[in-house]
Length: 255
Image 1 (cartoon, rainbow, N blue to C red):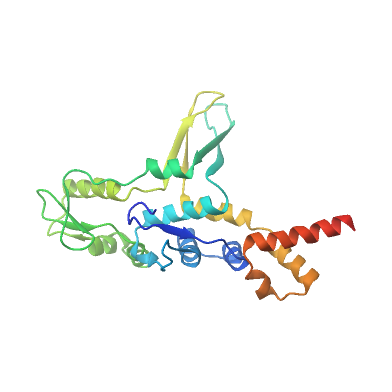
Image 2 (image 1 turned 45 degrees about the horizontal axis):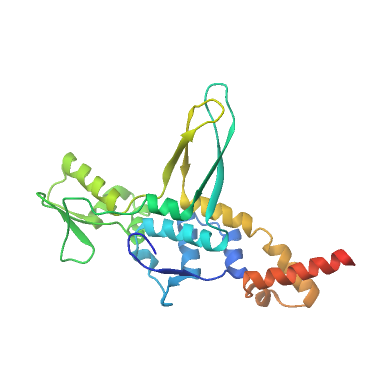
């Protein structure tokens, strides 16, 4: 379930076409995962999602859920200790479920749901605001003044003081927590505190590219063995295509 919208997400098995999209795309991580989510994600009932109407928190979560479905629950990565005289590699592992639970949204005191769909207000302040959507972020990124564009789309107030800006920032951080966060721990070698940034979109894109790096070789193997055209091979579910590729590899090994 996506954390902010509450949408129950269903992720289908990837085809070779999906794998090629991941491996060959030149889009930035946000646009690439947005494109992938549109391809393979839907509601549990099977209805398509308007992904640009969702907050980025939900796209980050969707990226991790896609990774969870296709690769597994546990994320394993590493970091290097930068303590004095220490360059030890530190193993980092955590589950997708635990990470999403740790960053679950909440509605803090003083935040009021208004009668306008998706809008909130703050007690004692003349302000209405809403959680920025992916559409808002895309619009802001193409503007010369992205912060002003984002504010104009998502905040309605006659005056923005520093105190009000801080209240809004705290409210939005609670309602739609960023999943792009820092992971921390201690180096087992020297005890130095180590932090590393975890960006769900960039990490998922990199990991999926590594997992799908054999798509060209497998397509070539099936085309050579069976004479199938590329579009037929790429339309196969990943599990079936890999079984065929495994049979071909076994036969060649025996021969």
